[in-house]
Image (cartoon, rainbow, N blue to C red; front, side, top):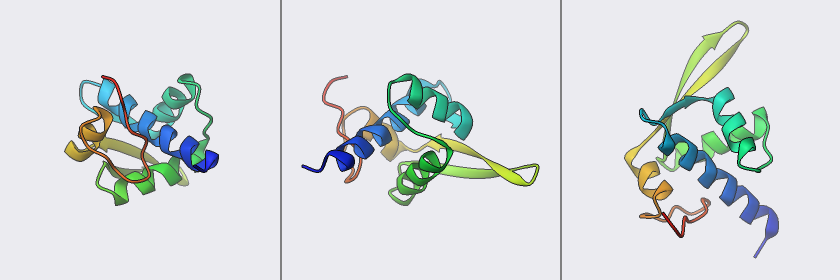
Length: 101
């Protein structure tokens, strides 16, 4: 197994789990980045956006882009599919599998 792939899969699972922990299943990308770092996973702004784009393409999250100065802020919402993956009920290729609840 490729170590860098395993790290990316685990980081993406942590993204989904962090969203799942919120009552409204929603966070902005800045708070989400801090939440994932707090779990001991290394990430940054660009890597988080790459992961969010990956997860959105697989139907795990929905990203809403809000204007912020010269840039934009991404609001991230967990989908039903992403929720199932966060709970270990569904396997998504490229996302780590939660083995315990």
